[in-house]
Amino acid sequence: MLSSPHRILGLTLLALTVPCTAQQLQQRPPAVPAQPLAAPQQSPSAALALPSGTSLQVETLRRYPMRAGESIEGRLMHPLYANGKLVVAEGTQLHGTVVELEPDSGLRWRSRLHGDFTPFHTPRVRFDQLELPGGAQSIATSAVADGAPVLHLTTPGAAPHRSLIARQWAQARGRALDQFAFFTAPGKGERMLQLLYRQLPWHPERIAAHTAWSFELTAPLELPGAEAATTPPPAPAPLTGSAETWSVHALLLSELTSARAHPGDPVHALVVEPVYDRDRKLVVPQGATLVGKVTASRAARSLGRNGRLRFTFQQVQFPEGYNQPVQGSLAGAATQQTQNLSLDAEGTITPRNQASAIAPLLLSLLASRALDEDGNVYANNTVASNGFGLVGRIVGITAANRNLAAGLGGYAAALSFYENFLHNGRDVVFPKDTRIEIETTPLRAPVLTPAAQ
Image (cartoon, rainbow, N blue to C red; front, side, top):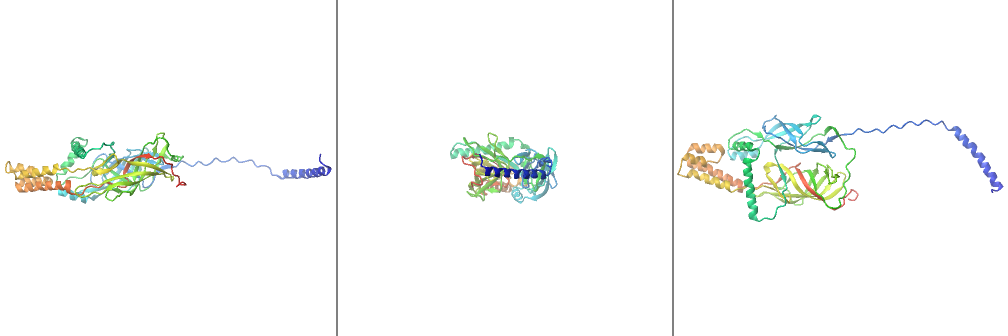
């Protein structure tokens, strides 16, 4: 029980509190009905776009006359991705024009040594229209003059160790098969025509079928109908358990050649197609960078000794800043067919050795026929005068001079000997934006985040 003073104090406080509370309730303004909240503005889905600098590889399917203003058509050799989404399919058609013809002084000089005085040119082309499912769309591209028939390199299986004699026999057998394929493989009609052209003192110029060009967009290309993904690709996680192999398609970010490369030089390549693992999880997003180095290089030397090049990759740098250690080597590439390169199981690239002792020896024997006193002089001169193309043969036959015919044949034999054995070898050249395929095995190491680095 509260004492009397405490009871009086409590009653007094209660009496003072009640009037104050009532006064506050009377002065509160009437409540204003709440306005309904507006729904958040949904940003429209952004259309995908290929950024400026995107590389495209285009291949023509038929031959075209070599003349400025000629309209040409080609197909996209590889699909294009934007934000990890396929936006332009492989085989999409493009339209372009031969902008101008540039003199090819190197080819002119070599051809004149063989009696061909055709004023050879290199076409500079520009593709300015892309055929999309919604219709043709104009594109802004650079004009390029690096067109050449394309050669697709792939690594063979691991070869057993063989002796020197066995390797030489395999090379000779390979050259024989290549020569046999010249007369049997598809397109032999075009090859026969080119063989005839090389005997003439002048012939029409053409852009060969299956010529490929690599060029870049000079302005972003908006792709209507394609929507960007609203969820960013997940960050790659370190793999556990058994390692698997990733096949990564990328473009070299700078030229790479055996003439200037040295072991240890850095190599960078831009990933152009997303890579998924066996569980269909994204492991290498488009836009990642492969980081590697040159592991072996040798420049071409005299006496027909060719160069060689090998490079590997040790790291994948992701656009978000993550790094994944990998172990990768070259498994394929698309290069100019004129280089005639080969790729072994270890990823070493070398030009094929085309030297042959048969051609100089055979031409020397034929040249000696002109000095043979037996037989018809015209028949002997026809067989002997192989130098300087059709012009040399006509001169050797009509002159009816054994010494002249033998001299023309000797010139052909000497030129063949020089081209097979004495001239400098060929270097391996991978221009910027060369398409490569890397077989990559992720290492059992944690993914390095920006904070951990």
